[in-house]
Length: 58
Image (cartoon, rainbow, N blue to C red; front, side, top):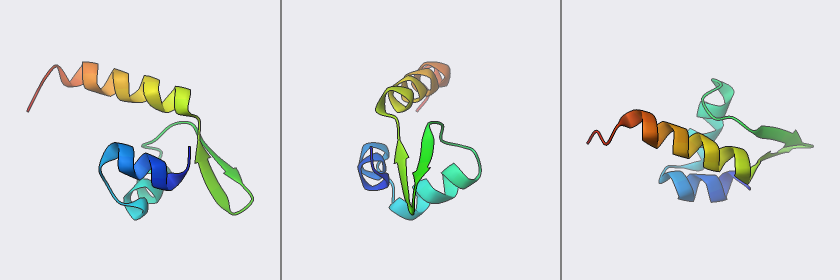
């Protein structure tokens, strides 16, 4: 999954994805040369775990 695809999924900017990844806030990121890619399976688990831990908070 590209940074752009993840940004769309998270409803944020590409810059925010890069910054959050740099701080260790997004798992599954792998550098391939100059590009950053994310494993969709890890991202799906991460989103699921975060939405479950939010407990339906608004």
